[in-house]
Amino acid sequence: MNDSKVILEGRVALVTGAGHGIGREVAFTLATAGAAVCCVDLDRDAVETVAASIRHQGGKALALIADVAAEDDVDRVHDDCASALGTVQILVNNAGVQYLSPVEEFPIPEWDRLNGILLRGPFLYIRRFVPGMAAQGWGRIINLTSIHAVVASPFKTAYVSAKHGLLGLTRTVALEVATRGITVNAVSPGYTRTRLVENQIEKQAELHGLSRQQVLEKVMFGPIPQKELVEPEELAQAILFLCSESARHITGNNLMVDAGWTVA
Ligand SMILES: NC(=O)c1ccc[n+]([C@@H]2O[C@H](COP(=O)([O-])OP(=O)(O)OC[C@H]3O[C@@H](n4cnc5c(N)ncnc54)[C@H](O)[C@@H]3O)[C@@H](O)[C@H]2O)c1
Image (cartoon, rainbow, N blue to C red; front, side, top):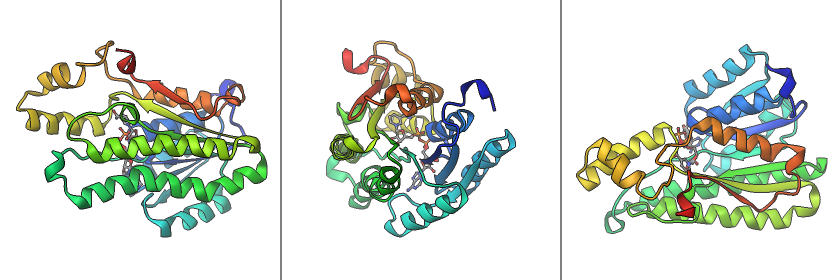
């Protein structure tokens, strides 16, 4: 670990969806900054690999297998993390999935699944972990929302609805905990280079009858001024900043990392 940047030494972080993509990058970045990181994911192999890799580099990490939408899993995650690493002071609600379908055919179980993972999960984790942060008088909650917390795209009814809701949850909790040393912020990525986007390119190609390159140019980059995907490392660095002391008066905010999408 690079000790010139250990601004989170002694802190304990929990990252959901830490097995892949943005969450994996966030786990590595917070660990490099000195935090002990509890990595939560449904994908056992992936999350155990991330935690082992952090430990291999000299950091502290624990892998826990859990479904963020499952109420029964939250207490176990809380207790296992507390006994192995200590009280969680940084919570990154990142786990996510996508499902595309015209609204009239949208399967109700998929609506429930997406809302469970994207909105109910963050609510359950915030509800469970706020008391520990409040007792210590210091906390950071970062919710991975999306450009789709503020704009809409066709065929994404469940995702857009849940992400709009997650931004509302972020703002509401920010007000409730404002005097307890806890900040609550959203980070809203535009299209980011992860498998979640790779899968969408395939599905969009099918729905619009386009090639992969045409999906990127006509569907995805259409409204994006910079015409580029965001890299997971950029989001991890934005989140690290929100965890820093310098960001203590940034709360209830929605940091857009969207290649200019919402400006256009
Ligand atoms: N990639 C993008 O372009 C993009 C854009 C905007 C927002 N986001 C958001 O960023 C977050 C991370 O997305 P990503 O692109 O890294 O996706 P990803 O598919 O690469 O990683 C998501 C992770 O969440 C885990 N996960 C899924 N369901 C889970 C559950 N029920 N319980 C626990 N873990 C679960 C997966 O196993 C995986 O490790 C998501 O909330 C997503 O909505 C991504």
